[in-house]
Image (cartoon, rainbow, N blue to C red; front, side, top):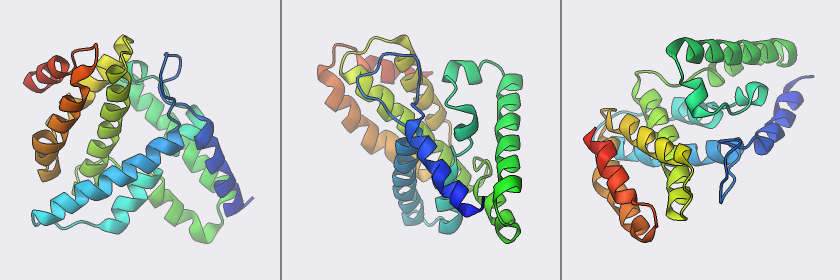
Length: 209
């Protein structure tokens, strides 16, 4: 009982593998994903600050570091499944949020319950911090898929993951998105030029859609 239970539960995130059921050259755990999202987000936030945007850093670190905690209870559901319909996505989110809430009720001391409810909530919203989380989350999908495509993995799911994540990022109006598209993505595409899969064409099609 108590916060020890929460700390111990974090080990489960190391054992949940992203994009289950598909051949991958590199396995990525939810725990590793969450760490990378924090790293992306803090740099994206720096870019926003350099453009005069005020960042709530405490909120940013809370929502980015804990954004996938609920997967302890439901696992990493394949992207095509969880996005099959808005209704299904809403139902999965409701189940995840309900189980997180139940966990807090059962294990977290009363004086910390409000803090945990704030920290473990769904952080993606229309605030600048919520949008940065969305971009950072999709950036990790881009990088995970890129690594597989670069090595010649022909699983169609990785092409779709790469393409759909870029489309989502492109549609978010932030300075850091402009920077990513203008300076980071071209370096990535250039690095993938020797891949047997035409990453440049996939990228071009995604950005043109």
